[in-house]
Amino acid sequence: MRANHFLHGTLNGCLVLDLSRLLPGPYCSMILADHGARVICIEHKRFKEDYTSAAARGIHRNKEHMTLDLKTEKGKKIFFALAEKADVILETFRPGVVERLGVGYHQIRNVNPKIIYCSLTGYGQQSPLKELAGHDINYLGHSGILSIICSEDGIPCVPGIQVADIVGGLNAAIGITLALYSREKIGKGQYIDIAMTDSCLAMLPVVVGMIWGRGQFSPRAAALVYQKYACYNIYKTADGKYLTVGALEPRFWETICQYFQVPEYIPLQYSEERRTEIINFLRAKFLEKTRDEWMKIFFNKDACLGAVLSIAEALNSEHTKGRKMVTEMDSDERGSGNALGIPIKLSETPGSLRTCAPEFGEHTRTILKELGYSEQDIARLELEEVV
Image (cartoon, rainbow, N blue to C red; front, side):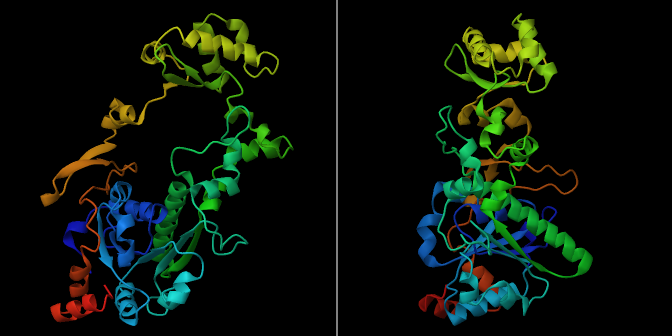
């Protein structure tokens, strides 16, 4: 069950069966695949349309894909044959679904005691909300995050990226790697229960620290994240672009005040009475030059000042190029194209971008042959729509 062209990275030799769809699960398995795991995505034929979107293609690199109907006995037989050899199974169904399909953790553990089985859901396996349908915005709401991502009038704002999906996928990948490490030490697999709402709530240590530290249960205790003060804010520039100022520490704030020749503002960094005056002063000042002019002025000054880049600018920035966070992938007959790079930089066992996303069901026949199915067997399975 090992393919030579997948022998790259820390997870070399690890076989992952990915039953997940959409973003959170595939994002998790992309991380595992980037670092050498052999990831086989397994989906029913009816989900082909979802798979072919441009967004989906980007997170299925380095993987294989097969179709399989787990509601059929022959489909389950094929899955169990794979599961016996697998190291990891990842699924994102609602709680209870995999058990009803006959491929839940306890059912798989009977044939593979060392299996690491990860369930990634919106609200987790044990929750009064576990049966609720949901998406990113719902998990952000239930975690409290939306209440602190808001405009000055307190209206919650929807982030431009899928925060809950991504952080849930990240935590699933962390959980799986921790379980793999644990298995090396104790020889046992285990079950991993990841909730995207939990993952979002766990992103709030600074906010809840402020709230608990002040003895108040109010989002407004975390005033810094509301652009309340001049030292932590966003400013428009002469060319209609924007700058970020994150001068939380007094020494950074002092640098900004000294540059604008307002030393009297240094001790007023967190003044309630003068905060509007100071914000308006900096708003007027930053409108005097373009964003890039300000970046040059402050480049060698410790002030925590940065540019708000468009996505296109960020993709083409010197930082992005230097960090190899946009790279070109060759894909044989499919040509080549750009791909986001690997953010985890390992010196001895680095991850790699090896193959573009497979076609839907591309590896079905190859994998079945590895399991010992003949051409006639495979043709019969296709006729019966098991695969």
